Structure formats: structure tokens, C-alpha cells
Length: 537
Picture 1: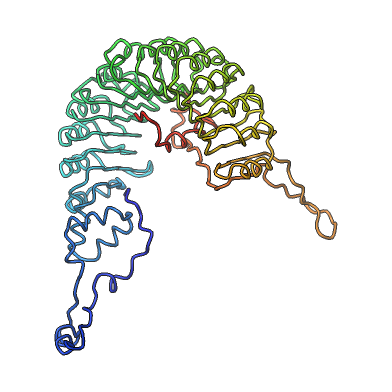
Picture 2: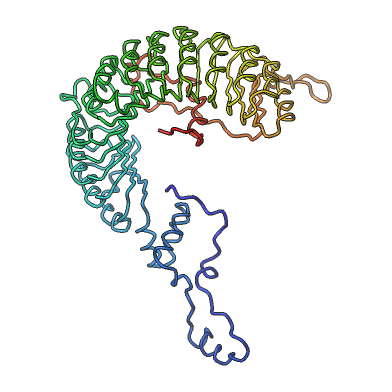
């Protein structure tokens, strides 16, 4: 439940909690036998009874979920304190859970963060269950609904009325529609973050009203829309959220240029919008030109938007002087390249993180970025045909602040990697993948010269023929995997989650924008794990 686990195993209850009293000095041995002898009184001293409830609750916060459950079985007092100090719950929200809601939240009466999940093969809790939960958990600040398909507009309206302290709300694969969302937003004046993913009720046919501003627009700072058929219904909410800082549009159908133009004409662009993610949505240079009015923009992700060109990126980079993180996946369309990168190098002097995927930068543009972006700490170059040894050597010699580097699918050889034995003095991690001209020996060579450098090197080698037996007879050939990983501290790569659970209708409607890329998450772990950035949003 979010608590950190304890490293030392807990001793048995009979020795750690209930102990016999210690033996007194010989002069008082007779009195000791009278008071502490188990045959005389049969009593034990519970030393934990002297621990105040507040201290006991604080101790529970350092235990993981399993240890907390075991501690709750020690005594009635521990059961009570553990339940009252539990602030986060994740529950399997199947219909069978409804009869136990009252008893569950009678014990856990201090829950502020709740997650309700139901798999697609089961029947989820309905409106009655959600209403009962909202009555018992009026202090909720975070709520996540996943796969709760039985919840309708009625349940969402009651949730908004009963849980007025909600600050973060996330829903995915639910069936309520625009009416329920409006009723919810009208009552949640404290809401700061809204995430909506695959909301089935918001469709072309089912959505008869736009998602209005409501009371939530007063404090709303983040809106995340993902895989929606008709996400443009949220335009009034985006327009009316005067404190909006983060806008994420991921794999949503429809034309989003008009939405961005609307946002640019509102007060949002002048005051607060600092982070924008555009991933596999229909947006063109028109939308990017409108986005350039957000002069305070710091984080920009443009991922697989084939209608965006150099002109749009130039407009954003030229007017948004505070850009710190830029991710561009050009999808190998060659519509974003030299001119856009030159503009970024010229105006984005505060740039700390740059990810280029499927883009072919010129040597001049890379050199300008290395020379002008003195604060660049994280750089990823993936699938670039023009990034070779010369460009890598330029990065090694001129990116003095660089700490983390990722090179993937580029025509780089050992000669280019050797440059990091002397360049980039602050480099702590380098990752090289799918570069055919890089051999395994360069990793050991680089580690030997820079012992503190973490080298994550995946190189392709020829298949090894292991068909010859000791007697020389030929047996069936055995092929070894073509990829050998040479990693200083081996960690499994996170697998990209598939969307196999989506219906065929959803996939067919999304068409080109429905699939997932191979290198979209190359740099995400580095970005989320970095805690040294000056302006965390």
C-alpha cells in the first residue's frame, strides 16, 4: 500500500511482544518468584502496551502491506490503530465486494487515497456501491477507477456531492458519459488533476453535451486525455481552467488544432501552461503555432504527429524561451530536422533534456545544441541515420554538463564510443542499443577507464554454430540469441504493455494512431528518475 518494507525479519510474537519479566537481583529473588513466576500468577508483561497510539501508527507507516496485515492480528488495539492509520487502499472492485463496504470502511475510516479496479471479465461495483463508499470516505483526496463499467452518471453525481475534497481523479474503461462527468465536476471545487482514459460513454453517439467548466475549473491544474473517441468535448473545460499547467493528449481521435487555438486565445496561455504532450493525435503546424503563444512553456512532447513540420517546431521554440524538456518523435518522416533543431539550440538555453527519435539531425545542428545548451544533462538519439562517430565525438567534447546518454539504432562504431573515455566529465550513465558497428569489447574498455560510469551496452553478434559434438559428429544445429547484453548492473527492461484488451472496433477506428512504437519509452525512466532538475513541474 505504498509503505516501505522492513529489511530485518520480525521475530516471533511470543518473543518480541509478550515477554516474561526479567529476574531481579538475588536479594529480591523471593519477591521475584512470588510476582513473576508463571505458576504463581501466570501473567506476562506486554511491553508494547506502553507505546502510544501515535508512535505505533508511525511505526506502521514504515511497513509494507503484508507486514501491516500481520501486525493487525497481534491484538485488538493493534488492529484498531493499524486500521485508523491506513490512508491508502487498493481494492478489487467486483460486485461481490458491495456487502462488505460498510465493515471495510468502518475499520479503515481514515482512507484518503483509494483505488478501485475490476477486470473486464467480472461485474464491477455499481452506483449503490460507489455511493456507499462516497458516504463512508468523505475525506478522499485521490480516487482511481479502473474497469468499473457498472457505474453510471448517477453514481458520479453522488461522488461529486459527497467527496468535495477530491484533488486527483482518474478513470479508465468506465461507461458513464458526459452528463455524469459534468455532475462530478460541478461539485469538486478542489480538484487539481483529472485523468480520463477510454471513457466509453463519451462517444460520437452517446455524448450529447460538452464537458463544461463547473466548479473544478477553479483549481484544475492538469488534464490528461487518452484514447477517447470524442475528446473534443472537453474543450470548454480546457478553455475554462485558468490555472491549467499540464495538458496531455494521447491517441485521441479528431482534429485538435482547433482545441489548441482555443486554449491559446484564453487566459491559460498567458498565465500557467507549462507542459504539453501531443502523442499520436491529429495536430499540425496550425496547432503548434497556436501553442507558441504559451510563452511559459517548459516541457513539450511531440510524438508521432506526421502533420507537424519544422515550421511548427520553430514557432514554439522561437517564442517559448523557457523550454527545459523536449521530446520529438518524427516517425522517420523527415519533416522535422535541421531547421527546427537549430532554432532549439538558439533559443532554448535552459534545455536540460532532449530526446530525438526518428529524426536525422545534421552535424551543424547537433554541434549548435552541444555548444549553446550548456545545461543539457540528458540526451537520447534513437533511429537517426545521420548520427555517426563524428557527431558522437562532438557531443563528447562539447556537452560538458551531460549526465545520461542513450544511443539506439544509429550508425555509431567503437571509435565514437571511445570519445566518452575523456569527454563529458559529468557523465554517469551511457546506454547503447542496436548499433551494429559497436562491439562488446568497447564496454569493458570504457568501464576500465571510467570506473564510476554505468555502461549499458547491447550489441548484435553473429549466430554461434554449436552443432559440432565432442566426437566430431554433426548434430542438429543450435542457434544462440542474436543479442548479447553487456551491462554493469543488469536490470530487466520494462516490457511495453499491449492493448490486447481493446475491442476490434476501437482498433479499427484509431487506425494509424492505434499502435505503439518500439522506442517511445527509451528515455522515460531517466526522465522520471531524475530528481536534480531545477524546475520540477
